[in-house]
Image (cartoon, rainbow, N blue to C red):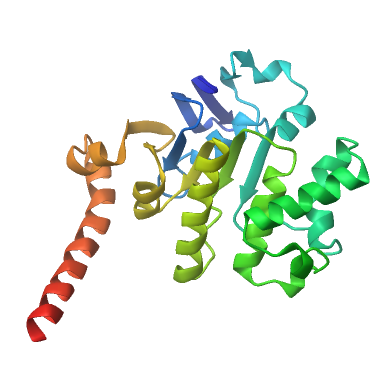
Length: 259
């Protein structure tokens, strides 16, 4: 297993438990979604993987090595990280933003330039058009693509995504979801995606882990959750995409009948 989360918990002063005895594993090449409503502990769990948040108990292993034994800065350079809002540096060009981690790793200038252009091509932003732009000159979807490129810059095989599609309009969101899944497959990435959107999880993930109040209530493949929800909360989450699918099917049938 690339990632193994073993009985991880996070308790804050005042005995607030954000994550409570959570265990799961992520295989090499797998895309796993952590799903749940705001405050369920999914983002805290994600941030414990790269030590942006330190667990209060339990441990997290990367290829069998306890991440607590790895310098946090080194660990974060080993993992790509992208999130909603992107967080691009406004005073830096697109190329400079993407090249931040390679520069910290002391790559040569030519190697960084080559990598930047390679990644811009990968995320469908022509390098000659976008490398010298500033974030303010980009649309939200373009900024998110640059965020993905930056997360991939140093060639990590593990990617952490914290609701990266949430602030985008539906068409841009759909295109980016499909493009990221294609990138995930092509590069054989190991990805953990945090989302509150059941439809997004069903369409993108190989496996879904549903969290509520800091605990895992069910995990399994999308079809398993759709057909066999093991908890009333999971059943409630599933009901929305099912209802929407039924409504769309009715509209299609009505349109066909009208013609």
